Image 1 (cartoon, rainbow, N blue to C red):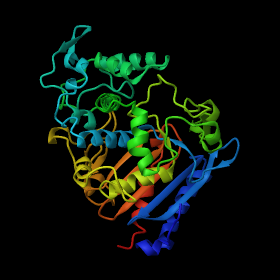
Image 2: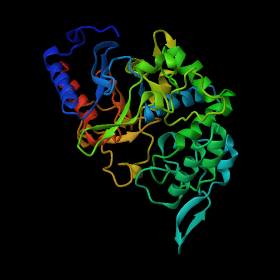
Image 3: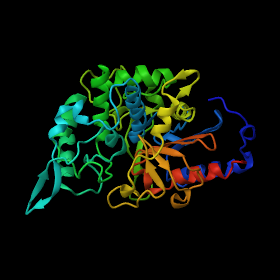
Image 4: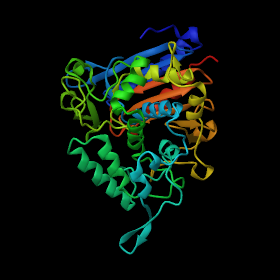
Length: 409
């Protein structure tokens, strides 16, 4: 990645050194194997650096072109794909999902227990495409601390499908059979909505989801390293995946050559499930291209992906006041933020406790990935590490704080 001197874009080099020291400390203290951070302002990269190792066993350095598992940052790319279809007139946001995927017309809603049995009722209002994008449709997640019976049903269904090679169509038909955990638009639940959205794209476009992404998002943006699979030629750039060990060190939980992403010939199996909510592998430079396109309101290097008004629509809050603040079951709510179409969007910096400007938006992935965009400061930031659980250290918050304190205006 070509960089410019930080001062050229209003960033103090001496103050940016605090970010360097903080990230190196995470590595030196054994909390992270490695991390990559890329930062740009006004379209110019002013910081791009890897710290530590992509693989502790082989001492492969963490570099800018290191491949990482995106997990939920995949959702931003899916949201872009959905909005491309929206711009083509394939649907409107408040259209019922069942208009495109009829199985959701009869999806019941969990309404409490009758003794030891779940009580199921009809949807009061149809589940909509907008609610899929904002996680407000009531679709269960199948993971985390949620305890409603549909969560266990979703978990069992997904685990069963993972044991076989199941196409996206079968996955989504299975999701439609799982009761919603609440009536649509009455609860924020980080569920399997983006699998449904990926299938929606397949149906209205007539293209396999992975093919649609490649043709209409990834290749136009020059995101050459973003895919569901890692080939033999890319393997030496693919990061290992870690968790914390009992001695407070790190333990590898997925070696690159043992990963579900590793397919030597680099071809996605014909009937493989290509998730809309997770599953892509990418690099910090590729994510910077995605973020810069969004900051530019839909265009990168002369190629338009989305209309400016569509990006504006994606990056404002769509949740009703009753659902804010929102968050994961049993976890601290995400104060100060609303939810747009694929991203968290900043409404109140004070409540959020962040130096970002109102209108900033971001998406993180549970593997240790973050993409954030701040239109006010013309800033795009990417953080990539590989640790599960990623949230035990405040890496994302630290990177943001130490980036903004280096801005000169």
